[in-house]
Image 1 (cartoon, helix red, strand yellow):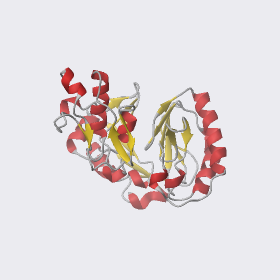
Image 2 (cartoon, helix red, strand yellow):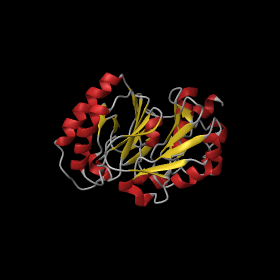
Image 3 (cartoon, helix red, strand yellow):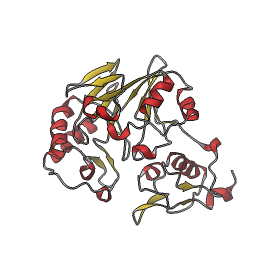
Image 4 (cartoon, one colour):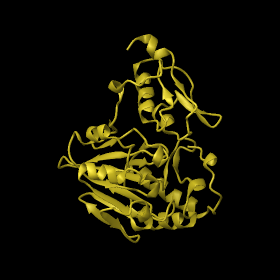
Length: 295
């Protein structure tokens, strides 16, 4: 790739839905301007160009466009390793509101998929190439769109909570109630009703927390937050869920469906979660408002 291609031509087109995915992957290069993402400046070096290519291949509307407008499949970085165990799937889907999805590698060489990217057979082949995928874990109804297709392709079990079962009525495993459930060695499901009736977070190896849309890392506040303006079911139920659950959670990686990811010492995460539970108890129901979210 030439220096000229590093410096010219990146843009965000009019299809942008302001989902925040590109801003997560190319901070400082892409930002929110007038209610949608925009390229602030062109890349100055190969690393910044790679960030923009990641944003382009993750964008659910394919609105992030490189010089010339055509994406180069050879520069697709996904699945992208976050460490030696968790990979970001990229290729976010418009049918899941642009939610992030992840691959969780297990010690025996298998993997689990948490929520789903957009569906295609070529992407499925890419995700299962390193080893078999045994389970597709859905955190809640908003992220269920492609769960059955991926599970069938992988020969995997599809999981969802009974509170959101109508979004995946053919699920193979149904979580019930609010007690934590060990679903595999080192992996526990914690039902967390609030964002939706059937929201679940998945905790792995006392290191990784796949929080769905229950909470996320905010760039705006530099802390863990709930998205109160898009809590569909009940902010009161979410507060009760956090109060019941945070004492059981130990992790270093916060891996949400929307909002930023963050890696911090477990003790720091635990303190922030306790403070989040206390703040959430003070919140009251408000009308749903997508524009109120400042990631």
